[in-house]
Length: 134
Image (cartoon, rainbow, N blue to C red; front, side):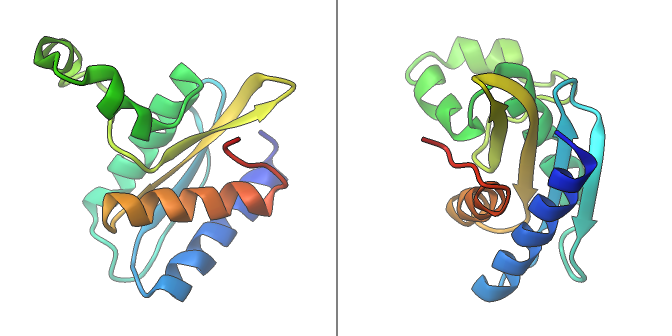
């Protein structure tokens, strides 16, 4: 993920959050989970900085949206128990991978609103750089 893509995506996510009337943090990371860009809106929960970054890191690490973890864990709570507390792991919707030629080049994470809203904002951030979840 280039720095230009990161800045555009994060800025677009913030614009979408403002349109929705929510206050969030939007983070972008590279394929290794390292920070590329981050904005915490005024009034967004301070914990949303860590949560947004961890959602992005989780998505970059697995190359899938974090919202898919609900189905992956399903009725197997032992899976969540085994993963719980792992640094940088956040199996909650709002993280989406940034893919180029089917390879993960980064990810975007959003936190601070309801899970569905975080997902919607992350999708808008992807759209701003010409990508989608499909």
